[in-house]
Image 1 (cartoon, one colour):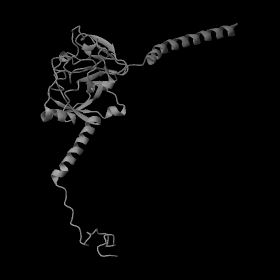
Image 2 (cartoon, one colour):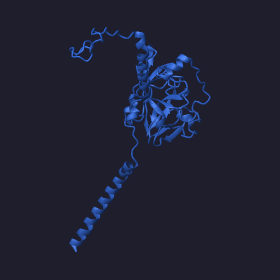
Image 3 (tube, rainbow, N blue to C red):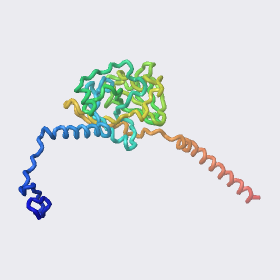
Image 4 (spheres, rainbow, N blue to C red):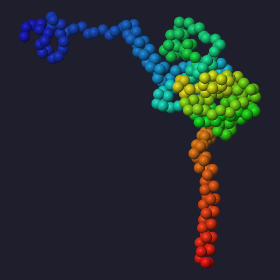
Length: 283
């Protein structure tokens, strides 16, 4: 083999054409790798925002004292992808169903805030989202009379643990404070914890959804108050929703009502047959 032939068997080491060992490659500088690291971080942040968790800011006092204006909450966006639907007692973020936020001022973020909201580190000012507590799901009958209590399928809720101190569960006004509604399929009924300061389902019964929120509008469930640090807390479902609030199926109600009648009729026929049989024997 000719001297300097780079294809020769030299133990697997690559050689320069003059037979000398190549100089070791210098590691790329941090500043050259920084754009790549930033790009990866942005992609991951976008994926997390789109499919896992997103931060939202609380814009009003309608959920006091559970949430305060200015709190940042983390919203679980993953479980809806697996077919999970909102449940009673959960605090959910949802897109404006039908101009609920009409007339509300729109924030004017600066460039940094816009960039942070784009990657999910801050809530978007362009999205018209609200946050309320789910009170009723499909099939439920929700009712408010007088000052309360609020009833779900005829069962009273004990809301003292989350309704704003000094508020009553139901309001006496005729604009929506007194109601009885049945939640249709694919919808939920939502109310704010600050009952006397929340324009929720009660006050939008004239819109195209009659105050109900389509399940498809739900972004996800708020699970944690993440900011400020002094306000850090989870957002569990209150114990009052652990009672059996499900609406009885019409078929089950019909069967329950018919059963005593069937038993009575059967007993009557049995007694009648005994009398006829005895008469024949005596004859």
